[in-house]
Image (cartoon, rainbow, N blue to C red; front, side):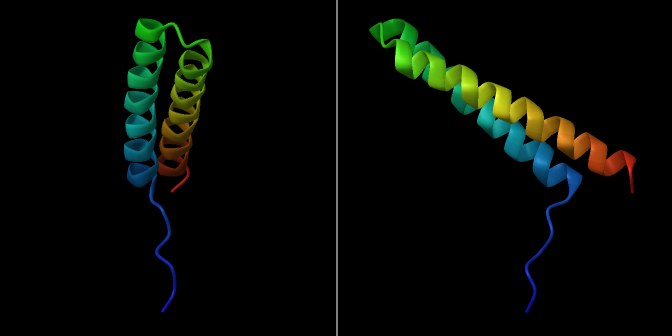
Length: 62
């Protein structure tokens, strides 16, 4: 059996989840004063944005 290939929608969904996770981490870092957690949250948000854009690109190139 082969592995199922991610579709553009899958990438967009993963990206949205990463962005939400990043927002929560950033907020938790801001509340606790943890600069590393805050930076990690921003990084997760950027990763999520990139995944969403990748999903849109996949759909455009179908």
